[in-house]
Image (tube, rainbow, N blue to C red; front, side, top):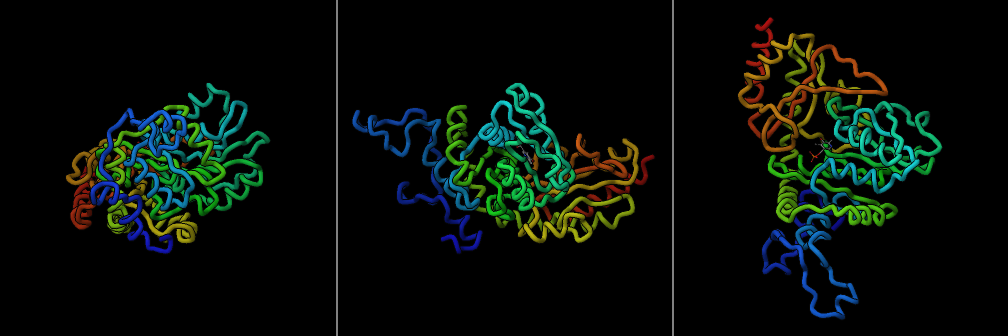
Length: 383
Ligand SMILES: *Cc1c(COP(=O)(O)O)cnc(C)c1O
């Protein structure tokens, strides 16, 4: 099983057809109460399912499939990617501990640390995404949080090097791996202890579900499971089902997102209005060598730094696009574009002009490029 190729695994993992009258994908279980046959069963507490909040066969199918893809001992499912990030942090950090957080982290994860985590006495500081972390560690550093590539700015981190130093200090390593998904990068194989995924994005893949998970190695599995249970975290059977369904087509969708994303990035790179493209799969990107070493692919999400342009010119470009929706999130079948508001506290991000984030969807690449071409003409023509 483990020698099979990814596409073979995503087709077969987590299936329990024999328990579901031959149905190929595990159906949606909606359940709160789970009945026990008798008091002896209550006492023995050996039923595979005990209460809806603690999971159903739908949850088990999804979590088993993810654990196999991630190379994890345990996966727990939650209602969003942000909840997954918060859960991973709460399952390792205690009052008085220090969390070393990457400066390019997804902004709402940063806000969780700045506001809620702080209220519980966990100290947080930030390190530049490509820096050596050693000078940033403190005697009470309990965890190092990574996100690679960085949100909005797409810096690739040397995860193995970070994990080596963190572990030598006795700190756990947490990583938000939403950009690559476990198809293109398996964090636990590079020394990460807790792998975080906003399954809302590519795993769901259709912009119609909110879902997250955390996958843990053996040393972190029990504490993750306990914290998840103590906090009453859970995801609805319907949503988990959509995650499981999305997983079946994830490799083929990602291959297309990658191809179209790179086609757009290479074309944009040559346009005079563009200062640079932030995409680690481009040979010119500072993170390219590390990306080549560690990743087996790139998704459809990347950044674009424009040359200085007025707000009106950027609006003329973006507002008139026919095939790119303006909206948050990404990973669905459709193309998107949003302005990137970059906040850094460890090291400023120097941009030549306005920064935009593009998600290449599953539309025809030629149609998307023609749309961008018309958009850049509007940008040029707007003072
Ligand atoms: C979107 C996103 C999240 C949060 O996921 P939600 O399901 O929207 O809560 C976390 N991390 C990254 C990198 C994201 O892009």
